[in-house]
Length: 111
Length: 115
Image 1 (spheres, one colour):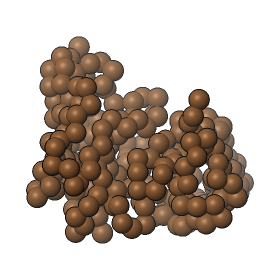
Image 2 (cartoon, one colour; image 1 turned 90 degrees about the vertical axis):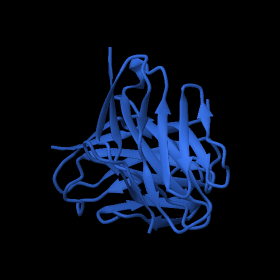
Image 3 (cartoon, helix red, strand yellow; image 1 turned 30 degrees about the horizontal axis):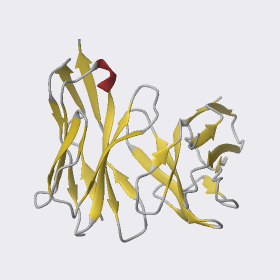
Image 4 (cartoon, chains in turn red, orange; image 1 turned 60 degrees about the vertical axis):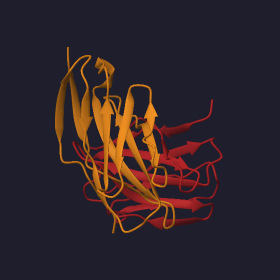
């Protein structure tokens, strides 16, 4: 089955800890994206990558980092510099300029 | 910069009735894509319908159709014969064909289906 997987479904972060959210796709899409969604809100773009080994900051990149070493994978690290990380994180992929397909999401909570 | 506005934070409709969700956008571009996404309680984002700006014909997908008014920069979603499974957040989105490949989302409309 082709699709986008995100893991884990729930993630707990302690104070001062970096955590990494996984996103994998087998759709052969060049472009991948990370969004943050707060309760009752829309989606805000954190980072996106249009090709392997290249990525750009979105609207709220501070406190986050990414890598794109493989076409299939686009992990997001929430660093200790992100002071309010509690949110729902969505990964998406697409052929450039076309429809974005989304993964099931990861819920990040702070202990 | 492009913006997308959904002016109805919440709406309710009786089961089997028809409901229309509003979306307006602002852009100086002539060619772009518009989308409606559905986010049910599972929080999975699901594409409902898409519209290419160069096409005058309104897109239709089963019970879902759009009213695309390019000059007015309006892109409303009509859901016919509403079903309980249609209850969700609905997001309108804009995508440029030319530039930095970002999608811009509205803040969403929460749709309640009344049995």
